[in-house]
Length: 294
Image (spheres, rainbow, N blue to C red):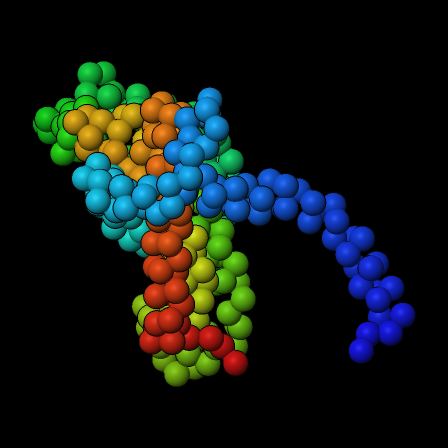
């Protein structure tokens, strides 16, 4: 049993946690629980909620529009994850070397991370503009007829992916750079003594010991990919012809455009369940490829 002194210690710890615990409860935990209740009601923000049970979930899971939005979200994730992770690994390895001006380049690569998504999306919407955009202008200089990018259903999602990778490279690079700097130098020295080349050091020393950081970056990037919204809303609003309609965009439209708060909340919880399943799957099978140092 906890004595008086123990309870005093618990109370003191709770007192110090209150400044962080209260906002967490008010702005995170309570809204999540409230949204779970809303997901089982019919509510348009104007009239009192009407309880429906699991009807909203049945509607969402059988809705063709939700299926299309989920497929588009998966398409975005499949295109986004490899590019942002491989690019971040390459940049982190480069900046971890004795590169002159490495600190400057770290700041340059991290600058998009702290830039507003609205600014980044508008920038890439201009860069990828079919008429007068910088990318198509440069392609034209080398004799390539640039595509319609975000105005073309076949190129709209790749446009979103390009903008997203450019913005998120710096964040993932920082995570992987921290992982690289935690690798002991004596392992590289031992590899050098054994006659390992630079490529062999990268393959047999760097990448295996970097896998915990890669896993962490992958999970964060995957969660962010499932929740993609800002760039889609600013660049395409789900178009053209629904080519970039994603789950979060459907959630926002159902909630604030159509007044279907119940369906929007149900979509959010279905998305939460999907993200949880993907995360558990990654953590479950991490032992097959993640190597933790002793």
